[in-house]
Image (cartoon, rainbow, N blue to C red; front, side):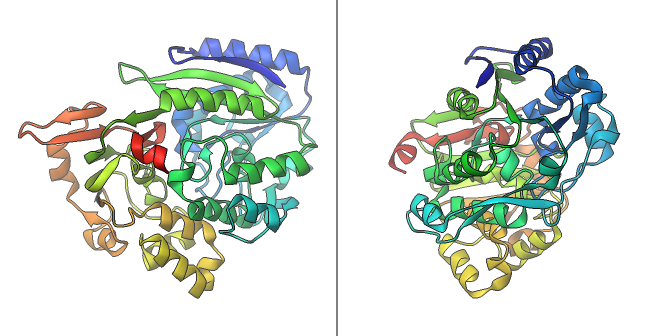
Length: 425
């Protein structure tokens, strides 16, 4: 059921608008005694999920007993991050998700179904795993809060991904990421109906009906003045709220280009992007827009590691961002990758397949570290002097010497594609 829906390409919802929207939805849902909130972590700060979680806590107060950020494989949030993102919500409500240990399996999607959806590219079953708190906590409402936006693994982020991946376990996360990677990012990004989504929907329909999950979905985009605008808010307990949000997100977050781009410069906010595990959104979200033989330059002042998880960081350093055939060969020959398919998927996501050059300008990693994983290196200070984020505007820029570049101030907010490449994929 859809409890609330408001949004358009020109809508700009204020905090008061969102409060009223939630209040309307919560009234339709009826009183609840024990509430769990599943917002994203700090890496999704711009989703406005922090504001919505605070508004939900203000509504339910003592009835909201737990808040479990949907970390997936990300690092637990710090007290400072929680305070910045969630404001006055009591710190004592927050729980950490341990994706290796704190999980239960709800059911298993058959290998035959997964194989069918992947066109035979993978042959394994998929376990629907969630944090045990969702099952054992005695909740009569689980609020899954987040932003719908184009995504490299599943096509469009959020809905049941926030549950099965955000609070999921090692096997479920690994296999879902690998499924999306081998199927092909260009065939997935910007599409609401994908093989990974179908597998998660199978799990929702067959194994999770007993969980009282209600989805609170935002659509966020930059306005003409560059500030972020909440273009839509959708609240519901089934796929309709996701489909409505995805339809709007494609209109406001997806920029289709008539010509491929020869040079793209992406800035990674240091408060949000500290690893290539996250920072490679600069690669994922622009890859369909970059011309063959083109250049992607990534300004990454906060970059200090490759993977936020120590084991994933080690695997990235060992194998590097090489071509898909090379990664698949590594998986076949090495149990450590075979047993950590999300890392293998990430290596595939981070390669240009030799089609364009990727150059990182890191704030903390060395030239040797950057080049050891297959990226080009450039000095951050001198590069930012030439390409000053304070002076560039999103979109096409003409430099003083006549060089034309396409600038992206936050790759997490959208997807860019050369129209013909998208249509042919």
